[in-house]
Length: 60
Image 1 (cartoon, rainbow, N blue to C red):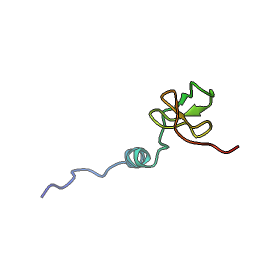
Image 2 (cartoon, helix red, strand yellow):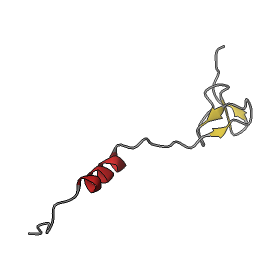
Image 3 (cartoon, rainbow, N blue to C red):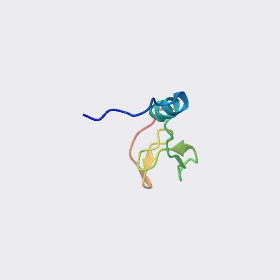
């Protein structure tokens, strides 16, 4: 069974932990219909358009 030869330093441990708990970056683009930010390949939640077509009816 493998055993570590030396103790892992505190900074090394914290760097490894920081990878797990970092904030997730989300890609955003602007809606060609209304100009508000939306996620790519999804319906715009502000106007209801996707790929140039009305998909959702949004009540105002």
